Length: 512
Length: 33
Image 1 (cartoon, rainbow over the protein chains, first blue to last red):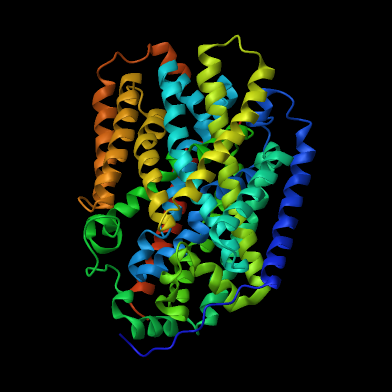
Image 2 (cartoon, rainbow over the protein chains, first blue to last red; image 1 turned 60 degrees about the vertical axis):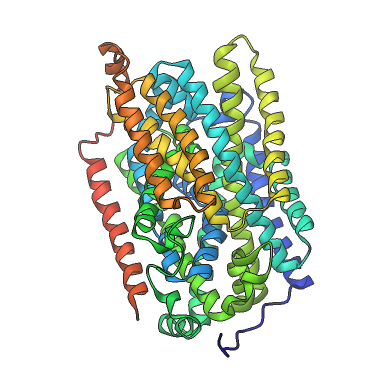
Protein backbone atom coordinates (compact mmCIF):
# COMPACT_ATOMS: atom_id res chain seq x y z
CA UNK A 1 0.00 0.00 0.00
CA UNK A 2 2.79 2.41 0.78
CA UNK A 3 6.55 2.54 0.72
CA UNK A 4 6.87 3.85 4.23
CA UNK A 5 9.57 2.19 6.23
CA UNK A 6 8.70 1.68 9.88
CA UNK A 7 11.08 1.19 12.74
CA UNK A 8 11.89 -2.46 13.45
CA UNK A 9 10.12 -4.19 16.32
CA UNK A 10 12.41 -4.34 19.38
CA UNK A 11 14.21 -7.60 19.92
CA UNK A 12 13.53 -9.14 23.32
CA UNK A 13 16.62 -10.03 25.21
CA UNK A 14 18.00 -11.26 28.48
CA UNK A 15 18.62 -7.73 29.79
CA UNK A 16 14.99 -6.68 29.28
CA UNK A 17 13.64 -9.82 30.91
CA UNK A 18 16.09 -9.72 33.81
CA UNK A 19 15.45 -6.07 34.60
CA UNK A 20 11.70 -6.56 34.35
CA UNK A 21 12.01 -9.39 36.87
CA UNK A 22 14.08 -7.18 39.18
CA UNK A 23 11.57 -4.31 39.00
CA UNK A 24 8.70 -6.64 39.62
CA UNK A 25 10.56 -8.37 42.43
CA UNK A 26 11.16 -5.04 44.14
CA UNK A 27 7.53 -4.04 43.95
CA UNK A 28 6.36 -7.42 45.21
CA UNK A 29 8.89 -7.28 48.06
CA UNK A 30 7.50 -3.93 49.20
CA UNK A 31 3.94 -5.23 48.95
CA UNK A 32 4.85 -8.36 50.91
CA UNK A 33 6.54 -6.31 53.60
CA UNK A 34 3.43 -4.23 53.93
CA UNK A 35 1.23 -7.34 53.79
CA UNK A 36 3.32 -9.02 56.45
CA UNK A 37 3.15 -6.03 58.77
CA UNK A 38 -0.61 -5.92 58.54
CA UNK A 39 -1.00 -9.70 58.58
CA UNK A 40 -1.13 -10.17 62.32
CA UNK A 41 -3.93 -7.71 62.51
CA UNK A 42 -6.16 -9.66 60.15
CA UNK A 43 -6.87 -12.44 62.63
CA UNK A 44 -10.63 -12.49 62.29
CA UNK A 45 -12.80 -12.95 59.26
CA UNK A 46 -14.14 -9.43 59.52
CA UNK A 47 -10.68 -7.88 59.68
CA UNK A 48 -9.65 -9.99 56.73
CA UNK A 49 -12.38 -8.42 54.63
CA UNK A 50 -12.33 -4.77 55.65
CA UNK A 51 -9.36 -4.25 57.99
CA UNK A 52 -9.95 -2.02 60.99
CA UNK A 53 -11.97 0.68 59.25
CA UNK A 54 -9.24 3.21 60.02
CA UNK A 55 -7.67 3.81 56.62
CA UNK A 56 -7.05 7.44 55.66
CA UNK A 57 -7.94 9.32 52.47
CA UNK A 58 -4.50 9.23 50.81
CA UNK A 59 -4.26 5.44 51.04
CA UNK A 60 -7.91 4.98 50.06
CA UNK A 61 -7.50 7.33 47.08
CA UNK A 62 -4.40 5.54 45.78
CA UNK A 63 -5.99 2.14 46.35
CA UNK A 64 -9.15 3.22 44.57
CA UNK A 65 -7.05 4.42 41.63
CA UNK A 66 -5.19 1.09 41.57
CA UNK A 67 -8.32 -1.06 41.51
CA UNK A 68 -9.99 1.22 38.96
CA UNK A 69 -7.03 0.96 36.63
CA UNK A 70 -6.27 -2.53 35.45
CA UNK A 71 -4.50 -4.24 32.60
CA UNK A 72 -7.10 -2.55 30.42
CA UNK A 73 -5.88 0.89 31.45
CA UNK A 74 -2.16 0.21 31.38
CA UNK A 75 -2.00 -1.96 28.29
CA UNK A 76 -5.37 -2.45 26.59
CA UNK A 77 -6.01 1.25 25.99
CA UNK A 78 -2.80 1.67 24.05
CA UNK A 79 -3.78 -1.38 22.01
CA UNK A 80 -7.03 0.31 20.99
CA UNK A 81 -5.55 3.59 19.75
CA UNK A 82 -2.72 1.66 18.15
CA UNK A 83 -5.19 -0.40 16.19
CA UNK A 84 -7.68 2.24 15.02
CA UNK A 85 -6.03 5.64 15.58
CA UNK A 86 -7.57 8.73 17.21
CA UNK A 87 -11.10 7.32 16.93
CA UNK A 88 -10.07 4.72 19.51
CA UNK A 89 -9.51 7.47 22.07
CA UNK A 90 -13.17 7.39 23.15
CA UNK A 91 -12.96 3.81 24.24
CA UNK A 92 -9.36 4.12 25.42
CA UNK A 93 -9.95 5.61 28.80
CA UNK A 94 -10.39 9.24 27.88
CA UNK A 95 -13.52 9.23 30.09
CA UNK A 96 -11.55 7.81 33.01
CA UNK A 97 -12.47 10.60 35.42
CA UNK A 98 -16.09 10.54 34.31
CA UNK A 99 -16.10 7.00 35.64
CA UNK A 100 -14.21 7.12 38.87
CA UNK A 101 -15.24 10.58 40.12
CA UNK A 102 -19.01 9.86 40.17
CA UNK A 103 -18.17 6.58 41.91
CA UNK A 104 -16.32 8.53 44.56
CA UNK A 105 -18.93 11.25 45.01
CA UNK A 106 -22.04 9.10 44.74
CA UNK A 107 -21.00 6.03 46.67
CA UNK A 108 -17.94 6.90 48.79
CA UNK A 109 -19.52 8.42 51.84
CA UNK A 110 -22.59 6.18 51.72
CA UNK A 111 -20.49 3.02 51.63
CA UNK A 112 -18.38 4.25 54.51
CA UNK A 113 -21.55 4.96 56.49
CA UNK A 114 -23.06 1.54 55.80
CA UNK A 115 -19.82 -0.01 56.96
CA UNK A 116 -19.58 2.03 60.15
CA UNK A 117 -23.27 2.12 61.04
CA UNK A 118 -24.50 -1.33 60.02
CA UNK A 119 -21.26 -3.31 59.95
CA UNK A 120 -21.39 -4.00 56.19
CA UNK A 121 -18.34 -5.92 55.04
CA UNK A 122 -18.94 -6.42 51.31
CA UNK A 123 -20.85 -4.63 48.57
CA UNK A 124 -23.66 -7.25 48.40
CA UNK A 125 -23.83 -6.93 52.19
CA UNK A 126 -24.58 -3.22 51.74
CA UNK A 127 -27.30 -4.05 49.21
CA UNK A 128 -28.74 -6.71 51.51
CA UNK A 129 -29.04 -4.10 54.26
CA UNK A 130 -30.41 -1.42 51.93
CA UNK A 131 -33.14 -3.69 50.55
CA UNK A 132 -33.56 -5.81 53.69
CA UNK A 133 -33.31 -8.85 51.47
CA UNK A 134 -31.09 -11.91 51.58
CA UNK A 135 -32.07 -12.77 48.02
CA UNK A 136 -30.77 -9.42 46.77
CA UNK A 137 -27.56 -9.93 48.71
CA UNK A 138 -26.86 -13.40 47.36
CA UNK A 139 -27.92 -12.58 43.82
CA UNK A 140 -25.69 -9.49 43.77
CA UNK A 141 -22.83 -11.67 44.99
CA UNK A 142 -23.37 -14.17 42.17
CA UNK A 143 -23.63 -11.44 39.51
CA UNK A 144 -20.42 -9.83 40.72
CA UNK A 145 -18.57 -13.15 40.76
CA UNK A 146 -19.67 -13.90 37.22
CA UNK A 147 -18.57 -10.60 35.69
CA UNK A 148 -15.38 -10.22 37.69
CA UNK A 149 -14.25 -13.66 36.48
CA UNK A 150 -14.47 -12.33 32.92
CA UNK A 151 -12.58 -9.25 33.95
CA UNK A 152 -9.84 -11.33 35.58
CA UNK A 153 -9.07 -13.00 32.25
CA UNK A 154 -7.94 -9.61 30.96
CA UNK A 155 -5.46 -9.17 33.80
CA UNK A 156 -3.72 -12.43 32.94
CA UNK A 157 -3.43 -11.48 29.30
CA UNK A 158 -1.99 -8.08 30.20
CA UNK A 159 0.73 -9.62 32.35
CA UNK A 160 1.52 -12.28 29.79
CA UNK A 161 1.76 -9.74 26.94
CA UNK A 162 4.45 -7.88 28.87
CA UNK A 163 6.44 -11.04 29.44
CA UNK A 164 6.25 -11.83 25.75
CA UNK A 165 7.48 -8.34 24.83
CA UNK A 166 10.57 -8.52 27.02
CA UNK A 167 11.44 -12.22 26.81
CA UNK A 168 10.01 -13.33 23.47
CA UNK A 169 8.92 -16.63 25.07
CA UNK A 170 5.96 -18.60 23.68
CA UNK A 171 2.42 -17.92 24.86
CA UNK A 172 2.20 -20.73 27.40
CA UNK A 173 5.35 -19.71 29.26
CA UNK A 174 4.35 -16.05 29.33
CA UNK A 175 0.98 -16.93 30.82
CA UNK A 176 2.60 -19.26 33.32
CA UNK A 177 5.09 -16.55 34.37
CA UNK A 178 2.23 -14.13 34.76
CA UNK A 179 0.27 -16.64 36.86
CA UNK A 180 3.28 -17.46 39.03
CA UNK A 181 3.63 -13.78 39.89
CA UNK A 182 -0.06 -13.58 40.79
CA UNK A 183 0.11 -16.76 42.88
CA UNK A 184 3.20 -15.64 44.79
CA UNK A 185 1.54 -12.32 45.43
CA UNK A 186 -1.66 -13.90 46.71
CA UNK A 187 -0.15 -16.73 48.72
CA UNK A 188 2.72 -14.94 50.46
CA UNK A 189 0.18 -12.53 51.77
CA UNK A 190 0.12 -9.44 49.62
CA UNK A 191 -3.63 -9.50 49.77
CA UNK A 192 -3.86 -9.41 53.52
CA UNK A 193 -2.56 -5.89 53.47
CA UNK A 194 -4.88 -5.19 50.57
CA UNK A 195 -5.52 -1.50 51.01
CA UNK A 196 -1.86 -0.64 51.67
CA UNK A 197 -0.47 -2.85 48.91
CA UNK A 198 -3.06 -1.44 46.54
CA UNK A 199 -2.04 2.10 47.42
CA UNK A 200 1.60 1.37 46.60
CA UNK A 201 0.55 -0.17 43.32
CA UNK A 202 -1.61 2.84 42.48
CA UNK A 203 1.37 5.15 42.88
CA UNK A 204 3.62 2.88 40.78
CA UNK A 205 1.19 2.54 37.90
CA UNK A 206 0.46 6.27 37.85
CA UNK A 207 4.13 7.17 37.60
CA UNK A 208 4.80 4.45 35.01
CA UNK A 209 2.01 5.43 32.61
CA UNK A 210 2.80 9.12 32.96
CA UNK A 211 6.51 8.58 32.26
CA UNK A 212 5.80 6.32 29.29
CA UNK A 213 3.32 8.78 27.77
CA UNK A 214 5.72 11.70 27.95
CA UNK A 215 8.68 9.66 26.72
CA UNK A 216 6.61 8.31 23.84
CA UNK A 217 5.58 11.77 22.72
CA UNK A 218 9.14 13.11 22.86
CA UNK A 219 10.38 9.97 21.11
CA UNK A 220 8.17 10.42 18.04
CA UNK A 221 9.04 14.11 17.80
CA UNK A 222 6.09 15.80 19.55
CA UNK A 223 2.33 16.10 18.97
CA UNK A 224 2.51 17.49 15.43
CA UNK A 225 5.12 15.01 14.25
CA UNK A 226 3.04 12.16 15.64
CA UNK A 227 0.03 13.24 13.59
CA UNK A 228 2.14 13.68 10.47
CA UNK A 229 3.46 10.14 10.72
CA UNK A 230 -0.03 8.75 11.24
CA UNK A 231 -1.27 10.77 8.27
CA UNK A 232 1.51 9.40 6.09
CA UNK A 233 0.51 5.85 6.89
CA UNK A 234 -3.26 6.22 6.65
CA UNK A 235 -5.24 9.50 6.94
CA UNK A 236 -8.19 7.70 8.56
CA UNK A 237 -6.01 7.10 11.65
CA UNK A 238 -6.49 10.82 12.33
CA UNK A 239 -10.29 10.72 12.13
CA UNK A 240 -12.24 11.07 15.37
CA UNK A 241 -14.80 8.65 13.97
CA UNK A 242 -13.72 5.97 11.52
CA UNK A 243 -16.64 5.64 9.19
CA UNK A 244 -14.63 3.19 7.07
CA UNK A 245 -14.95 0.50 9.76
CA UNK A 246 -18.11 -1.65 10.15
CA UNK A 247 -20.94 0.05 12.06
CA UNK A 248 -21.85 -3.19 13.86
CA UNK A 249 -19.85 -5.49 16.12
CA UNK A 250 -17.26 -4.01 18.44
CA UNK A 251 -15.94 -1.60 15.79
CA UNK A 252 -19.13 0.42 16.30
CA UNK A 253 -17.29 1.99 19.26
CA UNK A 254 -14.97 3.71 16.77
CA UNK A 255 -17.09 4.02 13.66
CA UNK A 256 -20.59 5.19 14.55
CA UNK A 257 -22.05 8.01 16.69
CA UNK A 258 -24.08 5.48 18.72
CA UNK A 259 -20.90 3.59 19.56
CA UNK A 260 -18.89 6.68 20.39
CA UNK A 261 -21.60 8.15 22.63
CA UNK A 262 -21.92 4.77 24.34
CA UNK A 263 -18.25 4.85 25.41
CA UNK A 264 -19.14 7.78 27.67
CA UNK A 265 -21.91 5.78 29.33
CA UNK A 266 -19.81 2.64 29.63
CA UNK A 267 -17.23 4.60 31.62
CA UNK A 268 -19.78 6.63 33.55
CA UNK A 269 -21.44 3.53 34.97
CA UNK A 270 -18.46 1.20 35.13
CA UNK A 271 -16.66 2.31 38.30
CA UNK A 272 -19.85 2.29 40.36
CA UNK A 273 -20.49 -1.17 38.95
CA UNK A 274 -17.09 -2.57 39.89
CA UNK A 275 -17.43 -4.09 43.35
CA UNK A 276 -13.66 -4.01 43.81
CA UNK A 277 -13.78 -0.20 43.42
CA UNK A 278 -16.76 0.47 45.63
CA UNK A 279 -15.47 -1.92 48.32
CA UNK A 280 -12.50 0.37 48.94
CA UNK A 281 -14.65 2.73 51.01
CA UNK A 282 -15.71 -0.01 53.41
CA UNK A 283 -12.40 0.02 55.25
CA UNK A 284 -12.15 3.78 55.44
CA UNK A 285 -12.38 5.88 58.54
CA UNK A 286 -15.13 8.47 58.97
CA UNK A 287 -14.60 11.12 56.31
CA UNK A 288 -14.25 14.84 56.94
CA UNK A 289 -14.52 17.55 54.29
CA UNK A 290 -10.75 17.73 54.12
CA UNK A 291 -10.52 13.94 53.75
CA UNK A 292 -12.89 14.08 50.81
CA UNK A 293 -10.81 16.75 49.08
CA UNK A 294 -7.61 14.81 49.65
CA UNK A 295 -9.24 11.62 48.42
CA UNK A 296 -10.37 13.38 45.25
CA UNK A 297 -6.89 14.75 44.66
CA UNK A 298 -5.25 11.33 44.98
CA UNK A 299 -7.77 9.76 42.63
CA UNK A 300 -7.16 12.56 40.12
CA UNK A 301 -3.39 12.09 40.26
CA UNK A 302 -3.52 8.33 39.64
CA UNK A 303 -6.54 8.05 37.37
CA UNK A 304 -6.26 11.39 35.52
CA UNK A 305 -3.11 12.56 33.68
CA UNK A 306 -1.43 9.13 33.40
CA UNK A 307 -4.50 7.68 31.72
CA UNK A 308 -5.08 10.65 29.42
CA UNK A 309 -1.59 9.99 28.12
CA UNK A 310 -2.26 6.28 27.49
CA UNK A 311 -4.28 7.00 24.37
CA UNK A 312 -1.36 9.08 23.12
CA UNK A 313 1.14 6.30 23.87
CA UNK A 314 -0.82 3.96 21.62
CA UNK A 315 -0.87 6.55 18.82
CA UNK A 316 2.87 7.13 19.17
CA UNK A 317 3.38 3.40 18.92
CA UNK A 318 1.39 3.30 15.67
CA UNK A 319 3.35 6.28 14.33
CA UNK A 320 6.61 4.54 15.15
CA UNK A 321 5.94 0.90 14.29
CA UNK A 322 3.20 1.27 11.69
CA UNK A 323 0.81 -1.70 11.41
CA UNK A 324 3.51 -4.33 12.03
CA UNK A 325 2.34 -5.40 15.50
CA UNK A 326 -1.09 -6.41 14.18
CA UNK A 327 0.59 -9.43 12.61
CA UNK A 328 2.10 -10.74 15.84
CA UNK A 329 -0.52 -13.24 17.09
CA UNK A 330 -1.88 -13.77 19.67
CA UNK A 331 -0.78 -10.52 21.32
CA UNK A 332 -1.25 -8.19 18.33
CA UNK A 333 -2.14 -4.55 19.08
CA UNK A 334 -1.78 -5.09 22.82
CA UNK A 335 2.00 -5.15 22.27
CA UNK A 336 1.89 -1.44 21.34
CA UNK A 337 2.85 -0.06 24.74
CA UNK A 338 5.45 -2.61 25.91
CA UNK A 339 7.32 -2.41 22.61
CA UNK A 340 7.25 1.36 22.58
CA UNK A 341 8.56 1.42 26.15
CA UNK A 342 11.48 -0.70 24.99
CA UNK A 343 12.14 1.35 21.85
CA UNK A 344 11.73 4.77 23.47
CA UNK A 345 13.25 4.18 26.87
CA UNK A 346 15.28 0.99 26.79
CA UNK A 347 15.58 -1.20 29.86
CA UNK A 348 14.82 1.54 32.39
CA UNK A 349 11.50 2.67 30.96
CA UNK A 350 10.40 -0.84 30.00
CA UNK A 351 11.15 -2.06 33.53
CA UNK A 352 9.21 0.81 35.06
CA UNK A 353 6.35 0.29 32.66
CA UNK A 354 6.10 -3.46 33.13
CA UNK A 355 6.19 -3.02 36.89
CA UNK A 356 3.34 -0.56 36.39
CA UNK A 357 1.29 -3.02 34.32
CA UNK A 358 1.73 -5.71 36.94
CA UNK A 359 0.89 -3.23 39.66
CA UNK A 360 -2.34 -2.43 37.83
CA UNK A 361 -3.22 -6.01 36.95
CA UNK A 362 -2.32 -7.40 40.38
CA UNK A 363 -4.16 -4.71 42.29
CA UNK A 364 -7.31 -5.22 40.26
CA UNK A 365 -7.04 -8.99 40.53
CA UNK A 366 -6.37 -8.84 44.26
CA UNK A 367 -9.29 -6.48 44.77
CA UNK A 368 -11.55 -8.68 42.66
CA UNK A 369 -10.48 -11.97 44.20
CA UNK A 370 -11.15 -10.60 47.65
CA UNK A 371 -14.57 -9.54 46.45
CA UNK A 372 -15.28 -12.94 44.89
CA UNK A 373 -14.15 -14.98 47.86
CA UNK A 374 -15.88 -12.65 50.32
CA UNK A 375 -19.06 -12.80 48.26
CA UNK A 376 -19.28 -16.58 48.45
CA UNK A 377 -18.45 -16.91 52.13
CA UNK A 378 -20.12 -13.84 53.53
CA UNK A 379 -22.99 -13.15 51.14
CA UNK A 380 -24.00 -16.66 50.19
CA UNK A 381 -22.86 -19.17 52.86
CA UNK A 382 -22.95 -17.00 55.96
CA UNK A 383 -26.36 -15.46 55.43
CA UNK A 384 -28.12 -18.73 54.64
CA UNK A 385 -26.16 -20.77 57.20
CA UNK A 386 -25.15 -18.31 59.94
CA UNK A 387 -23.96 -21.03 62.31
CA UNK A 388 -20.88 -21.69 60.11
CA UNK A 389 -17.87 -20.91 62.33
CA UNK A 390 -15.69 -17.89 61.57
CA UNK A 391 -12.59 -20.03 61.21
CA UNK A 392 -14.19 -22.18 58.54
CA UNK A 393 -15.23 -19.07 56.63
CA UNK A 394 -11.71 -17.65 56.76
CA UNK A 395 -10.20 -20.94 55.54
CA UNK A 396 -12.83 -21.28 52.85
CA UNK A 397 -12.09 -17.74 51.67
CA UNK A 398 -8.46 -18.68 51.13
CA UNK A 399 -9.30 -21.88 49.25
CA UNK A 400 -11.73 -19.95 47.06
CA UNK A 401 -9.03 -17.40 46.23
CA UNK A 402 -7.00 -20.18 44.61
CA UNK A 403 -9.99 -21.56 42.72
CA UNK A 404 -11.01 -18.16 41.41
CA UNK A 405 -7.44 -17.63 40.27
CA UNK A 406 -7.33 -20.88 38.30
CA UNK A 407 -10.49 -20.28 36.29
CA UNK A 408 -9.26 -17.12 34.48
CA UNK A 409 -5.81 -18.66 34.02
CA UNK A 410 -7.25 -21.63 32.20
CA UNK A 411 -9.53 -19.41 30.14
CA UNK A 412 -6.75 -17.05 29.09
CA UNK A 413 -4.60 -19.98 28.09
CA UNK A 414 -7.37 -21.80 26.27
CA UNK A 415 -8.76 -18.83 24.36
CA UNK A 416 -6.95 -15.52 24.86
CA UNK A 417 -9.17 -12.51 24.06
CA UNK A 418 -8.44 -10.83 20.73
CA UNK A 419 -8.26 -7.18 21.77
CA UNK A 420 -8.07 -6.87 25.52
CA UNK A 421 -10.10 -3.70 25.92
CA UNK A 422 -13.06 -4.97 23.90
CA UNK A 423 -13.28 -8.20 25.88
CA UNK A 424 -13.19 -6.40 29.20
CA UNK A 425 -15.72 -3.93 27.84
CA UNK A 426 -18.48 -6.57 28.00
CA UNK A 427 -17.94 -7.17 31.72
CA UNK A 428 -18.02 -3.41 32.24
CA UNK A 429 -21.27 -3.01 30.33
CA UNK A 430 -22.94 -5.68 32.48
CA UNK A 431 -21.63 -4.55 35.86
CA UNK A 432 -22.12 -0.85 35.12
CA UNK A 433 -25.63 -1.22 33.73
CA UNK A 434 -26.79 -3.20 36.76
CA UNK A 435 -25.08 -1.54 39.68
CA UNK A 436 -25.36 2.11 38.68
CA UNK A 437 -28.99 1.51 39.67
CA UNK A 438 -28.80 -1.21 42.31
CA UNK A 439 -25.99 0.49 44.23
CA UNK A 440 -25.76 4.20 43.40
CA UNK A 441 -29.43 5.03 42.72
CA UNK A 442 -30.57 3.00 45.74
CA UNK A 443 -28.57 5.24 48.07
CA UNK A 444 -30.70 8.19 47.02
CA UNK A 445 -34.06 6.77 45.88
CA UNK A 446 -36.12 5.73 48.87
CA UNK A 447 -38.81 4.00 46.83
CA UNK A 448 -36.36 1.42 45.44
CA UNK A 449 -37.30 -2.10 46.50
CA UNK A 450 -35.88 -5.61 46.30
CA UNK A 451 -38.14 -6.57 43.39
CA UNK A 452 -36.68 -3.76 41.27
CA UNK A 453 -33.12 -4.71 42.16
CA UNK A 454 -33.71 -8.41 41.43
CA UNK A 455 -35.36 -7.73 38.07
CA UNK A 456 -32.56 -5.33 37.15
CA UNK A 457 -29.87 -7.90 37.96
CA UNK A 458 -31.55 -10.74 36.09
CA UNK A 459 -32.17 -8.56 33.04
CA UNK A 460 -28.63 -7.14 33.14
CA UNK A 461 -26.94 -10.53 33.11
CA UNK A 462 -29.18 -12.04 30.44
CA UNK A 463 -29.10 -9.02 28.12
CA UNK A 464 -25.32 -8.71 28.36
CA UNK A 465 -24.78 -12.40 27.64
CA UNK A 466 -27.22 -12.66 24.77
CA UNK A 467 -26.20 -9.24 23.44
CA UNK A 468 -22.52 -10.19 23.49
CA UNK A 469 -23.26 -13.14 21.19
CA UNK A 470 -25.16 -10.90 18.77
CA UNK A 471 -22.36 -8.32 18.90
CA UNK A 472 -19.67 -10.91 18.23
CA UNK A 473 -21.64 -12.09 15.20
CA UNK A 474 -21.89 -8.52 13.91
CA UNK A 475 -25.68 -8.36 14.23
CA UNK A 476 -25.66 -5.35 16.54
CA UNK A 477 -23.02 -2.85 17.61
CA UNK A 478 -21.31 -2.92 20.98
CA UNK A 479 -22.55 0.62 21.63
CA UNK A 480 -26.13 -0.45 20.88
CA UNK A 481 -25.65 -3.27 23.38
CA UNK A 482 -24.58 -0.77 26.04
CA UNK A 483 -27.83 1.15 25.58
CA UNK A 484 -29.93 -2.03 25.51
CA UNK A 485 -28.41 -3.12 28.81
CA UNK A 486 -28.38 0.29 30.51
CA UNK A 487 -31.86 1.47 29.51
CA UNK A 488 -33.38 -1.97 30.11
CA UNK A 489 -31.76 -2.23 33.55
CA UNK A 490 -33.09 1.23 34.41
CA UNK A 491 -36.64 0.30 33.36
CA UNK A 492 -36.55 -2.99 35.28
CA UNK A 493 -35.18 -1.24 38.36
CA UNK A 494 -37.56 1.72 38.46
CA UNK A 495 -40.74 -0.02 37.29
CA UNK A 496 -39.91 -3.23 39.15
CA UNK A 497 -39.54 -1.29 42.39
CA UNK A 498 -43.24 -0.43 42.27
CA UNK A 499 -44.20 -4.13 42.31
CA UNK A 500 -43.44 -4.19 46.00
CA UNK A 501 -44.31 -2.00 48.95
CA UNK A 502 -41.46 0.31 50.02
CA UNK A 503 -39.55 -0.40 53.23
CA UNK A 504 -41.28 0.85 56.42
CA UNK A 505 -40.79 4.55 57.10
CA UNK A 506 -38.75 4.01 60.27
CA UNK A 507 -36.37 1.65 58.47
CA UNK A 508 -35.92 4.15 55.65
CA UNK A 509 -35.18 6.89 58.17
CA UNK A 510 -32.44 4.75 59.63
CA UNK A 511 -30.96 4.01 56.20
CA UNK A 512 -31.03 7.49 54.69
CA UNK B 1 -2.38 20.09 15.31
CA UNK B 2 -5.57 18.33 14.25
CA UNK B 3 -9.00 17.55 15.63
CA UNK B 4 -7.68 14.71 17.75
CA UNK B 5 -5.58 16.89 19.98
CA UNK B 6 -8.36 19.46 20.23
CA UNK B 7 -10.88 16.83 21.37
CA UNK B 8 -8.31 15.36 23.76
CA UNK B 9 -7.83 18.70 25.51
CA UNK B 10 -11.57 19.37 25.60
CA UNK B 11 -12.23 16.11 27.44
CA UNK B 12 -9.45 16.88 29.92
CA UNK B 13 -10.89 20.32 30.62
CA UNK B 14 -14.37 18.83 31.01
CA UNK B 15 -12.96 16.25 33.45
CA UNK B 16 -11.40 18.94 35.62
CA UNK B 17 -14.68 20.87 35.56
CA UNK B 18 -16.51 17.71 36.61
CA UNK B 19 -14.24 17.40 39.63
CA UNK B 20 -14.63 21.05 40.65
CA UNK B 21 -18.41 21.08 40.27
CA UNK B 22 -18.83 17.60 41.73
CA UNK B 23 -16.70 18.37 44.77
CA UNK B 24 -18.59 21.57 45.41
CA UNK B 25 -21.89 19.75 45.18
CA UNK B 26 -20.72 16.86 47.35
CA UNK B 27 -19.36 19.10 50.08
CA UNK B 28 -22.45 21.28 50.20
CA UNK B 29 -24.10 20.80 53.54
CA UNK B 30 -21.35 18.40 54.67
CA UNK B 31 -20.83 18.77 58.41
CA UNK B 32 -17.75 17.39 60.13
CA UNK B 33 -18.60 15.78 63.44
